[in-house]
Length: 165
Image 1 (cartoon, rainbow, N blue to C red):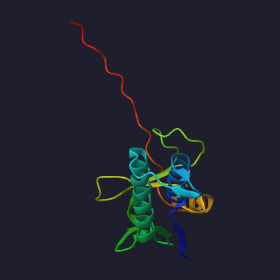
Image 2: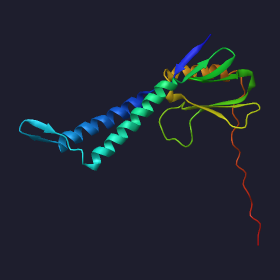
Image 3: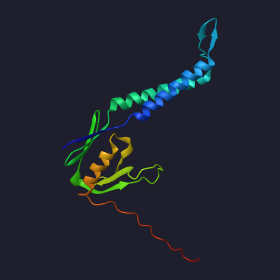
Image 4: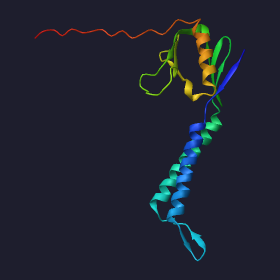
């Protein structure tokens, strides 16, 4: 069975619309009506700043649409897929998996992050669940995979004793 979870683009759409509405609102306030004609002020530096922010957010939105990132979960593999790039991770190669909160991010939600370590790879894989569509189904699939994989190790803090001078 193959499950597909697409990367959310809501934030990028909202960001672009907010910058566009701020540009239009500022241009409407700053512009002037002269003899029933609306003249737009191009010499204002804030207009250029709004235009730059809008263009950057628009380019970012189009790049993320073009990348079309998805997370595929099959019976025996987890696949990170985007345009021109695909990484398959066999479930049998996962050393340990942790499903829980991210320590550095203070947002609501019990399941924010899925981390797993793969044999032969130094760094961890992190899947931020909130960035994908149908996040509850994604957590359910990851919990199903986690039943067959050892749990993540908890950090042990050792107390160091200071030596007397």
